[in-house]
Length: 226
Image (cartoon, rainbow, N blue to C red; front, side):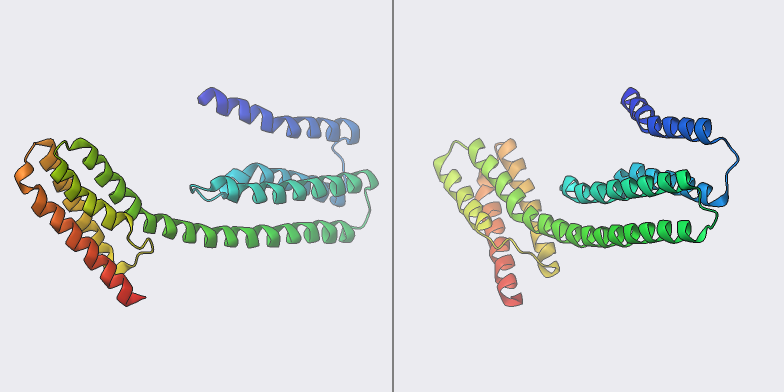
């Protein structure tokens, strides 16, 4: 992992090394202000391109968030580089045109980037909410299904299947008003797992009934909220 990071650092620094070699060997160190503005703008655009991974919101769909951001920073760098090199070659005496062009490019980039970051945040919040809502049905159903497979007694299997069917068919969309009930369902499932693990089959029916009652209470409350 450490070696991989070092290789990336080397790769990222190649452009800076080559560009600065060309700049100072061909143009020297004595430049007018407009040239230094363009020089700085190119470097700023490149550092923004390198910073793109740090702007990507961590999520299960980070790739979808990162793709448009990389496109934006890459296009910005391309324009800043082409325009910057052009001004370096022309070396205009007046700084006004150089500043206006570079500021305009940077402003368009900044607005586009911020709009995408805001959109990503909005999408991420909705995705996280959706994942949280899916958690109850998906995890509870998965755990109950696993417990069914651990049972040999057909009567007990039918009991747990009843709880599984009830939870699995439950409304996915959740609400804060039923979160405590959902937590109680998970606690009862954990209790059921312990009973099966310890082969304490006498109390399984009671725990399964508790799960069913809680699941029905959750579903009833959600219907009222809707």
